[in-house]
Length: 136
Image (cartoon, rainbow, N blue to C red):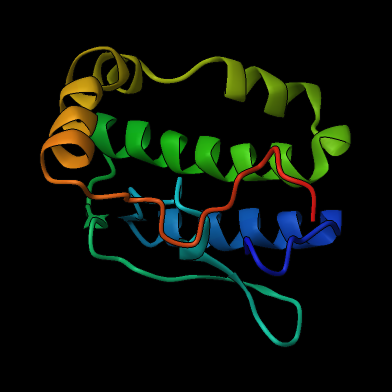
């Protein structure tokens, strides 16, 4: 996705449709924040890869629904990067309202995780990501 830079709103509609199919099947991805996990296929359609952190639930209970919401929120972050002008009000509301679990992660665990992985271990963890402020 970071190389193809999708700008067709239909691509994002298709990606959201694909995500809904995953969620209906009881699967949450849990790693859609990384652009390399969402592809633009040769035919222009979206694909999702790297299910290493994915989870499956038959019951799709509260934790599943929170994770599914975060999957959607991360997809919308990518839409905001490439087509912010086409975000609906509902999509902007979702982006502005991370789940309580996400807020807890960002405020407590993530700073420690980033310190350990980036400072102590020297991992970049930005595979395929580009500087969004850079001009091509």
